Length: 362
Ligand code: NAI
Ligand code: MG
Image (cartoon, rainbow, N blue to C red):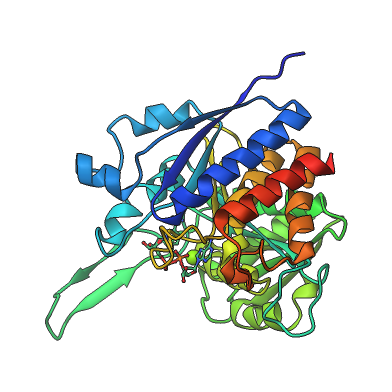
């Protein structure tokens, strides 16, 4: 039976986004070919500084209609802060996608891979292997608030945290489902109910209520302050960690940082119902400091493609793609690894090595 093609909008963006994207696409193409997964790619030049300079806007007027026709967005990175301020580039593109496509789950793996040195002493591959689920649309990052009496002694600023039963329950459900699908079936909730004494006790109560529907999932919770310490001191205890927008944001940088370089970390912004496209991207930005040198690590981008495959249920293909990355890293060849991993390789050398490994594994 002919499968319906997965339609993927490719947006390379700026800086190293443009350099790593082709390797991500080629890895997906290679895997797609092996597993008979029909993939349809279409590349867009918008959501970039060059597009902005030409058109005076980050996106065309009809961007939402155009991108809505895709199953997924495969996004490099955006931003050239020396040329255009970040609030124009990021808010004019990536943040619009996340909000308007209701990508309410931000998902990041924290996994220590052989061949990548953890900044935490004494941790070996297998010790760290968990997921962070961040609420991605509301919470502390609301636009409700304002300033009055600006510049005077009476100056007042306020910004409200907004949590809705709808918004919290749906992200908790995603996190519980994920925990239930994993061998350890463990879910940790990030809270701060001892300090933030309205929204956070309420968050805890939503977690308790959801937990009743998942009797096989072990649930615990930590206040965010000690939770960050545990990420560093005993990352092995975690399986799935769920947090509000702010707590999730902090944890989802800290977690991957504990597993090595930012250059390999991927991230997915998911609209689980598939009403809108989900967005898959590396965690890193456009890295203007190394852009144009051909030395960016392509693994964050490639691993984001792996999350895309996993999201659409191509589990075996996703496993092989990750295995290919792991095999190349495990060989620890200095001529292949990029500088951020202590090597002398280039984007091209490392990217090609992974593509070759995908073909060899099979
Ligand atoms: P960044 O992630 O671009 O770079 C931080 C540091 O990590 C730099 O020293 C860079 O060279 C290094 N690095 C990042 N990715 C790497 C890779 N693949 N291989 C090797 N080294 C890598 O963050 P920064 O410098 O704060 O931001 C630069 C621009 O990117 C800004 O305009 C920022 O707003 C934007 N940005 C965009 C994001 C996105 O599109 N999702 C995410 C984060 C930042
Ligand atoms: Mg962040």
